[in-house]
Image (cartoon, rainbow, N blue to C red):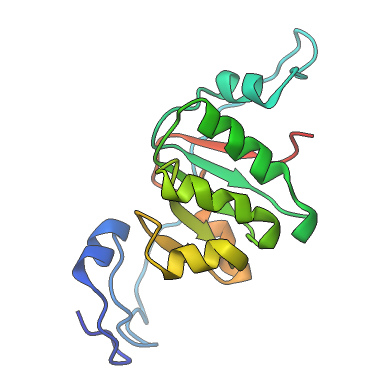
Length: 174
């Protein structure tokens, strides 16, 4: 389908994302809509510590399974190895079809290409990718979609606001 700036957007992308093509700056002028927040469940663990012995234990407690979304906040930039450690454990557990939502993926995350190639990771949502992950996506190795959002638009992609019924939020494991 051709959008308002003349770009052809493939139907399969529109269907997979549930989005419409850009129809112009003023297309939604006067449109009224209701904002809706996610339903959340309060969990207060007053039975002791939430500490666990390993990343494996965290993933088991969170109920990791095929097809889930795993979200990572980055603050180490090119020194962030938490993503790599968590994804190695997910791979070793035999979990497949994972969507990664990461603030940013850089050269420090090059080891993830192996998991893209074997189907552990099938979709990526981020505000940017560089290094070998970017090359893998450009070369068609990612089986699903790579969705890039502006830095300010990342909040719309959080798993707790996404349509997936299950998502893990891995922020500060270590």
